[in-house]
Length: 248
Image (tube, rainbow, N blue to C red):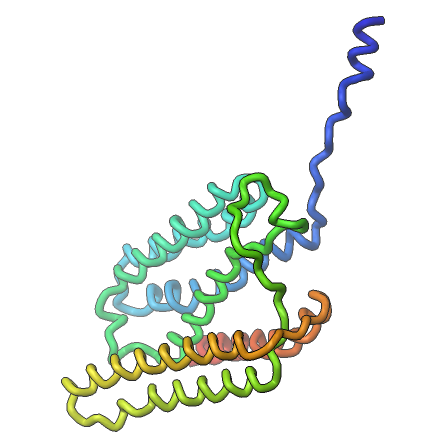
């Protein structure tokens, strides 16, 4: 009887929530698709060119298993997933890139393929990001106390106009150094133009945020639906770029 009473008083074991299959596949795709895209353009393609060393081919092929395995540990063992997907995949890809050697000289570099590959690596880096779990982060016992953060919102019209004006001004600063003829002076001009552009953007951002109360944004689902067409267009351009690179 005492054993039965003790057993009855014990709390029932809590079941760990299981992520839906669609969310799991989406998490795998956001790592695999950009990784495969960037790897095929910037690592595999150069290593398969005539004259590339055997070491570059082996290193390029050895990077692929790290990429494929890494998403499967992202939920239960994130440290191991990052070990495979970041250190393993990026390390072997960088080693293969270096082993290609003279084939990646400036005169042999294909600008469209290099630009598309850079976009792929950027998307792969974003794929490792993670949205915070639902709930109020201030309720966490380990939270560091500080000033409350304002909710996200849409800037007023005048603040948006100020930001667009600052972006155009920054682009103007970046374009000015191209009229400098001497190389020695051009380096200094480009450095100064980047510093001026960053200063203008930083000052405009601070003024825009202080110029009015932000308007509240729509729901997350509405914001995701609003970017569906631009994201689809970007994906279509990347696919066309990959086809263009494969046919050249």
